[in-house]
Length: 237
Length: 288
Ligand SMILES: Nc1ncnc2c1ncn2[C@@H]1O[C@H](COP(=O)(O)OP(=O)(O)O)[C@@H](O)[C@H]1O
Ligand SMILES: [Mg+2]
Image 1 (cartoon, each protein chain N blue to C red):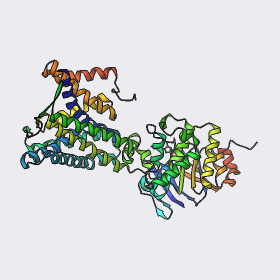
Image 2: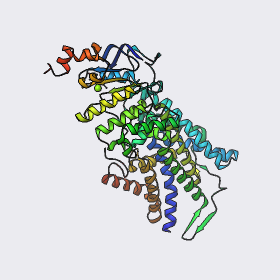
Image 3: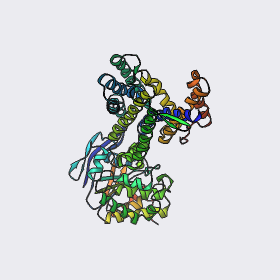
Image 4: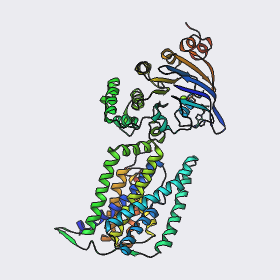
């Protein structure tokens, strides 16, 4: 569904990602894991069209999307839940959801999806007319995911959805991601929370200093000595 | 006397509100102050005025012409002075300067095309007065007030309720976020710049009606009034621009009526300074 070849993106002179290649097959959950500063967000922003790659290609559903504008990429069926959630704090929860559906014109479909989101995330129904900025971190993350889903994406990108959230909320978020995938949306998730991210994933890639150093099925990565050493807090006890 | 002056102040002030709305809309989505705003809408208004005086066109046609010409100038501003700098990620100060450059160009063009002299508005409308007990309103003031207030009401509704209005608010809050939600923010910026200039185009014609004349240099003086209102209301605040424009108009008119007309601007701007000392973020602004 998503195929990335030899992608390189720079900030000025600094190459943040250097020739990375990865595949996200339809219907799967793929995790991209790596430490702070490894280039995870840069990868996501490049896929979503916010950063222009210096070289390499991105093909989404058979269509070349590197060089496309972010709104065109959303229209093609790809939605990003950005790092730090980026809720529109001065707009209401309802308006945030409406903006997620900006590219769509099917009023009834939007209404149905809105209802679906409020059933998935009951807190959103309670807070519908409240400003986005007044919600807690976990609630904002729910809203950011629901908002992205309002575009009815084929592929959902999640950039560190667990960042800064309490453990109990984190496990809720991962449950939701699993459920979204079960309902047919393909997922590419970026995380520092390696254990959780690999547990729900089918396949994983490990990013270090802008390069993919390891990849394999999620299961094999969870049992990989190097992964355990570097990301899972050393030896199993 | 008091009520009469209040109506006069409201009339003038409502046009200042329209001007300030133009600044605030553009600041909202782009984070810059468009120093060419005044020149753009006075150019448009002069075109409208010439249509009325030389070709005997009705006021409605002049108004539409002013709106269209101002909006087109806004579009040209976006493509020549704003977008090229936005692409290169240069500091906001650069586009402040490029809009000043655009302002100078438009000002020179006005002098070439319309001359530097004041142009009178036709006197055919507005001389009727309505007696409403304590106040008498000239029909021209009634027209100005009605157009300005209806326009602000419609604008407020449009920004709050329509899909495009919400896209403008989303872009104003965070362009990056708006982008990844599927909003074509370049399109939003074009709409905003044209809308802001068009509002100025309306204000210019209304001011011409109020003062019975237009002068090319009014672009700068009215521009500064709009800027003062922008700061007073809180930069980027739409209700701030609406309320404080009217407030400035009322202060000015009362200064002239109960004080000395030569101190009109001094008192108005002095008061603005005092208010800003007490509330630096503006009356409707949020603390940074
Ligand atoms: N806007 C930026 N300008 C310059 N360098 C940046 C910028 N954003 C990120 N970087 C650098 O690029 C590298 C990768 O960052 P990022 O993609 O944010 O990593 P991650 O999301 O994995 O923490 C880091 O070294 C970071 O310092
Ligand atoms: Mg990151």
